[in-house]
Image (cartoon, rainbow, N blue to C red; front, side, top):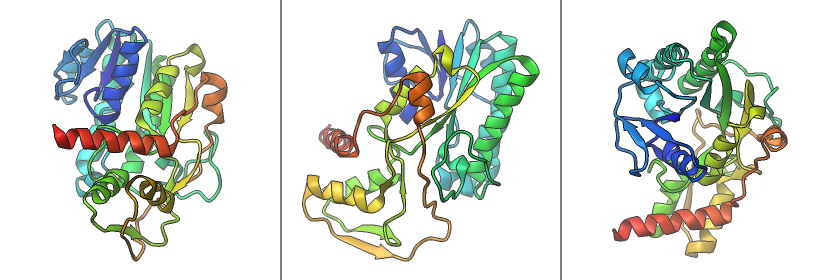
Length: 297
């Protein structure tokens, strides 16, 4: 049995789909009902030790995705961010050890690399965080590693690039741009538009998570990101190919904007046999189709 915390969310639901496709039995720990019926739904609360103990019973591995993932929410409610991302992770780790779970796979982020100017890999130094969200994810990584050293709970840390695709939050950049394009409304780009991300289509990211279950993934850290660094200008250009002319307006750069880093994924290719397959062009088309279908429903 595989437990997925946050399995009803954006990335979690896609991960659950891939796990079911691979023949795994899946238990979803989430307050929200899963999107599919062929999983066990544990409608639990991360705050409650008894819920976590029950959820971890007879589980071989845990994918820990439940977290405050919205960076704006993290800034507005830092105490909640630290509680959910770090303190509740401690509770989960204790429940996992009590139930003799074999491994925990943590959803982290490439944000931990900070404002690096060069290409980063898993051996790159982690700087002091300049954002409370980043601090909480570094804290999660430290907790997972320390639990392995203290209690022998094996781990895999997965540093996600910026995911996009069906089910993504409406306030994420690509989601916002697509809605603006569909409505023929002007798009706002801050700065020169050369800031970017190693965007990764959510289906590819889910595949990377499943690949990390391999023996070669134990006690390792992996970057799961797109093959290339994509600027905001490139996103807009790809949307022009779908929608035609787009009205783009520029504003001053925001002081706290994350310019993005170029992420090396060679370790995941080598040890897990994984790499993303969906180009930005194809991924955007799939997402546009999804939004269009939702609008008609």
